[in-house]
Image (cartoon, rainbow, N blue to C red):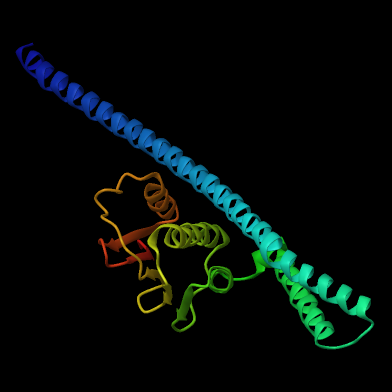
Length: 254
């Protein structure tokens, strides 16, 4: 009887320990499952944010292109066609064929080329087919032609092909940086570099007036650039100071 009583306590303790261990294991499994569910939800939310950012970037990029094309149609193509019309009318009225007709013909050719180029820019299928480097190169040519600011593009080696989402967001970020330089920096030269030395990286440098980064750190435009880069796992770094121009470095975080 005493021996049986002596075994009760160890059995109870062992049972309690076993129940505790089972409960602890179940708790760990529940916590791990909860963590996995939370992680999947976070990944889904990040993907939704990326999808929204890509859609916004694509829409804004197209809107920006349409705005610029509208200005060029009004200021450039319209003027060329007006000159052509005036020259042809003058030639027809005078009944003479001379330099005026040649000038009119040249203006018509330039106007036709501008219309073709803008149609190329608006062709969505061509936009999806060309690479980020090609899109940046075309934008640099357009800016140099329209703004009369020297824009130099340097590409080292052959950059890797990026997925469409990353390319769309990066191109929109590039457009924003370029527009800010044109509007606010007073620059006469902009240098764009695309390097593959340590993985693809993009650098945009202007020789403008620069600014104090501490005073514009919370600016919506600056925050937007950083947030969009973060969504595609890139980072944007700005190096500038008053009187020393501005340089943006865009590169992957991994």
